[in-house]
Figure: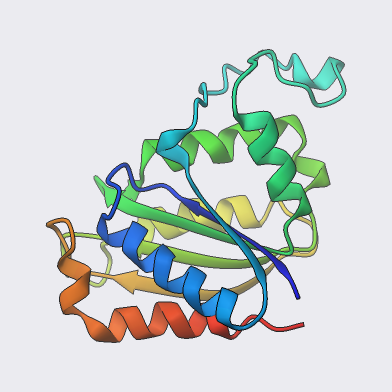
Length: 181
């Protein structure tokens, strides 16, 4: 059994990327894993100000918000899923804030299996490049990371559009279900 943490960056509950996170969660749970999904928009997370308070205080941030708990869960997870809708060809602000705030203890984030879920209204082949570049950049800062899978949900704009793409739902479930000891 692995500890799987899903960070859903979607600000829309039941939005397209959030729905795919739920399918991934079902698959991972059905495979016998311990799975948690965090909707980051529901947490109080201040943006990093680059003050480096954390550097001189044992990784404790100057902000007393929900990020300390989330960061510990990231460190403890075996599998990390990053999920974001694409906003102006990049990762959404909610998830980027979480990624930036990992600076407090980033050297403790190690040996992770990584999965990425990104959705976009546009259907062009390069629509997700900026978002995936952000995910890959974060991954390169993790010792012992392994990128295990990416789900591209293109051409989904309105809330729930992804439900009319059963192939995406299947891929999300199967990606989660592939997680085994």
